[in-house]
Length: 424
Image 1 (cartoon, rainbow, N blue to C red):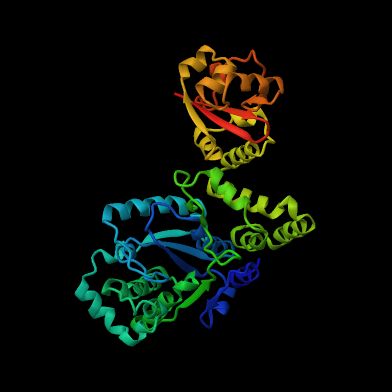
Image 2: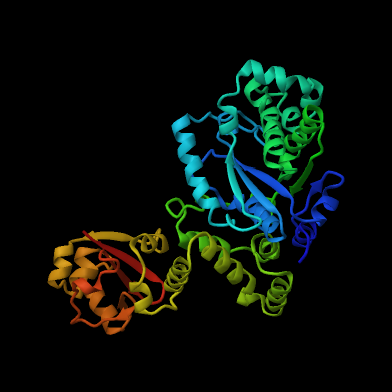
């Protein structure tokens, strides 16, 4: 088994670490943590970089701690931000924390010798008075030290509140608390967190007379320089209510060749040998997209489920004309709407569908898919009309069993001309 630093290094996930960190981690059995920002009720795919850091940390014989920021979420991390964020109320914050905890539990093992734990920093800050904090903690950090951090320097021109200025001290105290009470000697995070993390190591040295370590991973960007985890529709979330499994799968399947090798190493739990074999297969026939298919399958199954992956594959095949009617009929309503987003739609009467609507009325009068009864008849003679991927003739009439997810009919002329009828 590789040690953790070696694992990160070959995966391209190592950015920086303080001296002594590699020697510490070579021994294994280290307790280390990463903090997660609870500003949303779901983690995004961008958070998967740190989720995978903890996953690899645990798989190489160490004890991961995931910190959800009930306290720091009330303040707002200024790192990488050009303006101050709106602060969350306690109810919204607690809702977000609960949702994120459930997601983190999918990826880490909470049993056994290296069992993971989840902690909430609100638990130790809720009784910590302001005067007590600035007296017992604040006196150990100089203003000069705090002002030198990039997260502060980059905001000086436009100004920053004392609330955000104090963020690094609060995060630093998190590290001190976990070092003192949880035997946690390592904090990890993205490279933009270096300043906050090293504030923690410094506080442990000054306040506790101890030694602690820091390690950061690179920020993952696309080859074109844009932010990873964004699509035209916005963020790609782990919550299926925010980003459907189909859209999640499609986002990964459509990864550019310039990015996919990097993503494969960062997000897969496959071994070096397995990944290098897939890379070699991809190099021989890039058009087969072996790497895209592999990472799309692995992450969709891990974030959602095997069934969601199968549904996403079926849905993809529907869109590109390779599916059977059975595959189409297996889709749920939400996936149908995702797959045919942007396709022309019309609402029809469910009662009329169940009563047996004739094909000419369906395609012309009821939906307007085709312009006239005459055009429908010509298309039928050309054998170019399909309902739910099945070719139909002029004597076709609808019935209840034709409805996908009890609500939809997929009308099609030729290979690419789709229309969605919604029965209500």
